[in-house]
Image (cartoon, rainbow, N blue to C red; front, side, top):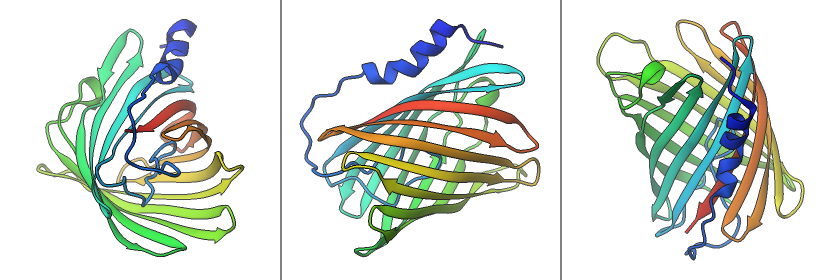
Length: 246
């Protein structure tokens, strides 16, 4: 069902109303795992907490729905290791409001050079969702995250992995997310990419693009948009987000 224009606008604008002013123990560019479906290989600096949040809306033949929250908390344990916790989102599909559930995990850097980096990301989705997101079992997603330089300001990243539910007889699913990124200016970055999620049932395929803006030493804003293009659903989506370290 359609959301009212006021409710949808609030859902998209709210992340930019969050003002975080605490000092940071890290310097330089922010390595955020948003926007986009994939995760980068970069880890948060030791002793640093990084919060990433946002909102998105999608429109298809059945109407418009939105998601508000997308909160991911990242903490740097060591130079090569971070812990992660996903607080989840509220899915708004009037007249219903559902919760997407929480997750915990970590990212471990396996290798790094001046031109490339490789990490493994492990995420456990906990059975805390409601409505369409309700699940009685824990599932784990294990993926490799790679990034390599192709030239000045140009890079190629990719995620490849699998999601496995614990218990029951559900089959594993697989993911492949290649992304081409490039620097527009010192403060603005852009990317285009594909995200595929494959199962024994209906696969999900997305094409997406986005921009990031380093608005301050510790704050980065983002905007992204894309299409779901598969036999399961055809939809247009757009989102806004914020990443801040402190």
